[in-house]
Image 1 (cartoon, rainbow, N blue to C red):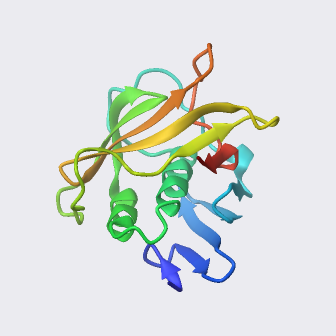
Image 2: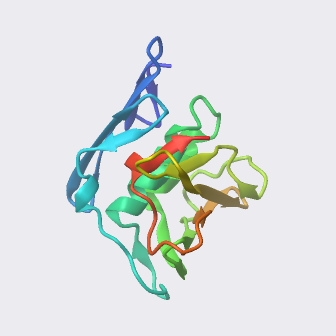
Length: 169
C-alpha cells in the first residue's frame, strides 16, 4: 500500500517506514518511524492539558498526535482510513487528561467494528525502556468515543504520553 490514511501517512512497503505530516492547531507535526516508535519534531511544543474537561473543544496537538500514532499502528486494517477521517472532526466533550471522552459528527464515515478498544497495543515507555502504561482508543457505535492512557505506575500521569514514548506492544 503506497499511501495510507488518505495521504496523511505514507508508507514505504519494503522498509515498513511511515511518515506522518499534518497540521494541528496551526503547527506542522512531522513524525517518522517504523512502528517501533515515532519521533516528532514538535515534541516539546505540544499542549499539555490539566484538570477535568466539561466543555467541547478540539484535540490538543499532543492528543491528536497520539491518536494518529495509534491509528498508524493499525497498518492495513480495513477501518484505518475511516478512523483517520473521523480524527479530523473529533472533539473532546469531557473526561480527564488520561481518559478523554470524544465525539465525532454523525456525517463522518463510521466503521464496522464492535464497541470497545481498537485491536492495537501502544505502550508508553520511559528513557530506560520501562513500560509506563498504554494508550487505548475506544470505539462506540462505529465512532471514536474515547482516548485513554492506562498507566502502570503508582503515580497517575497528568497528561497523555508524548508520541515519541510510544511503542507497539
